[in-house]
Length: 216
Image (cartoon, rainbow, N blue to C red; front, side):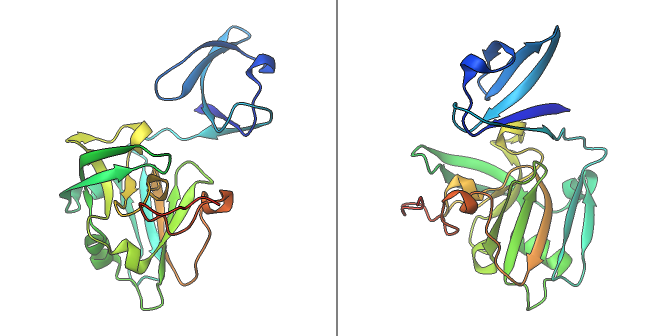
């Protein structure tokens, strides 16, 4: 497993490793006591560290759990995911920091297909998306989940998702900024009550509509 140094405020001048360089995906190759490790830096670059392991996707062991307020909870292997009907959808991707990518070709499972499989109950008013990289998660209302072009994507531009883009599966909701598109999906729960997601607890709106001011 990799070890993640999630930096709220990291001072690289006093960081207790030697750096071998930062790659384009944000990983930092470090050498410590003769043992080279690849670590991922998140956040800004001053003071404080949180250290934890992050996942490695293995198709042989991956499981997507879908449960909560549903009549037919399921545990899908990666083979099950691949065998589930998927569609291609073309949409623009917008990051809250100001950049966009037009005409991204996504392939994935539609909300309608997933709901046909698990049959949500009337009490299910929200959908929670948990990442393999805990504590990363977020939530949509059922109405938002049913919006056009929302997908549980497994491919981007004709290729399987790379880790940096959310492999093996990520949420795509083109009407909202990218921080709502939970990457590395492992667990989907249909819920009665709203829950504040990872970014909402850090000052962002739950309703991340593109074009709106969503930071507080």
